[in-house]
Amino acid sequence: MRDDVPFDAHWRDSARPARFFIVDYRAMFPLVLALFHITQMTFIIAGVAVVFFCALERYGFTVTVFWRWLRSTIAGPLRVSRPWWMRERKEYRDPT
Image 1 (cartoon, one colour):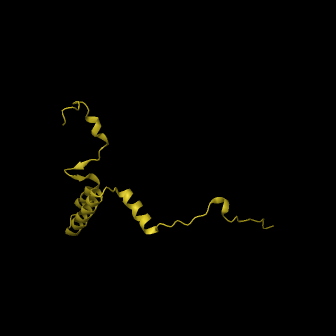
Image 2 (tube, rainbow, N blue to C red):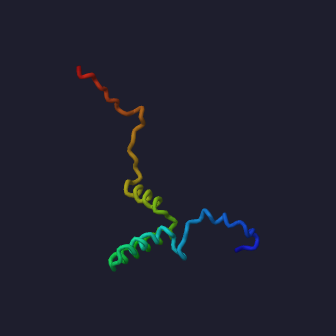
Image 3 (tube, rainbow, N blue to C red):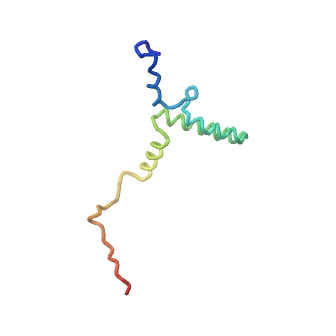
């Protein structure tokens, strides 16, 4: 702990994400699931998932941000839309 920070300022760390050693807690979730079904394949899948989540964290992404980035990359830069005042209005007639 730094010398200039008061000893009772432990609440300052409350916004930081939880970690298991150096790995973010979200990356360890697949390993916890693999412990419920102990086979070699589930540990391999969980290990790949941990490496994937660690790589996301290394590049500054969270899972939510990564999915948004992936969705916008797949959709492309062009957004086709029309404002509400330029849309065609559908006229509904009474069937009688």
